[in-house]
Length: 371
Image 1 (cartoon, one colour):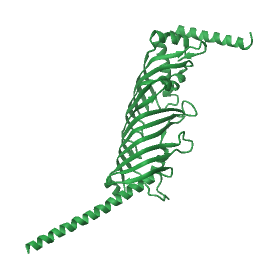
Image 2 (cartoon, rainbow, N blue to C red; image 1 turned 180 degrees about the vertical axis):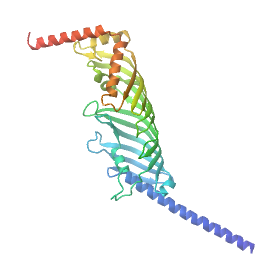
Image 3 (cartoon, rainbow, N blue to C red; image 1 turned 90 degrees about the vertical axis):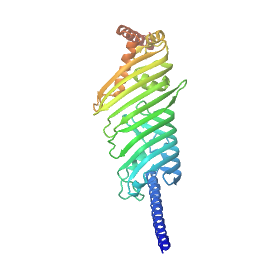
């Protein structure tokens, strides 16, 4: 009798376990289906993946492509060999989106800086994630979304900058990696931690670039550090020199720069150091040529006395909401003034250079008039 009772207990327990396994597998299948459908919905009409494999704990996409929208400077906004998404399965079962991690490997990601200075990336994905529910034929995404960790590995960031010229000036950051932690959409009011590292290949030098810190995307409050080391000055010529009034041709040199910036309530405070190593300028003999508003002849002479090395320290302060305040213009003005002081070009020297420029203009006019 006891043996029979014991057997029944074992059979009952086994039956309960079997039911639980069936329920668990059914729930897991449902979660997997939900995960796959939501990935397809997020990719949107302009996104594609060669395969979407749903495992027990993650979703893996291979050969992913997100096409750029009309007017995008690159054919694709993103290409990636593989994207692995690890969702919180329990949250999926509750119809909520909580992604523990996203790892993007072997990528090419284009970032666009518009003429007004705003940054734009993954526009199609953003539209897909924010697509309204009403009238949607595909599975829609909840409004609230949390992503704990995003990693970019072994790829390239391509920056297209319309503030420099049109068509956009392109700088590629290769051998790149990046992490983004703590994204809570749609509010984006919590601090999001960001870190980016990579290399910039120039005609004669390969330098490194890094950026890190935290940003409150909604309010724009932030605390970040940007660093350049050994970057070929030719690659940054449109930013640091041409825009600051350098008409002289830069033929060589590297740039080191560190900027520590804080933004609070739209007020920017930044401390920076910029060093040019082995800077070389071509002296065309044209009196109209200048380097940072300094006559080229004077700049070349000053550089020779310093073996081509110049270091400038600068401070930027201003209200980002003030239309009269421009970060770029303030930085370039600080650099121009700093270079003149460091190179020892006095006010008299600049005035003399201006006189030579006027004289050169006079000679040019005489030649034009045949006199």
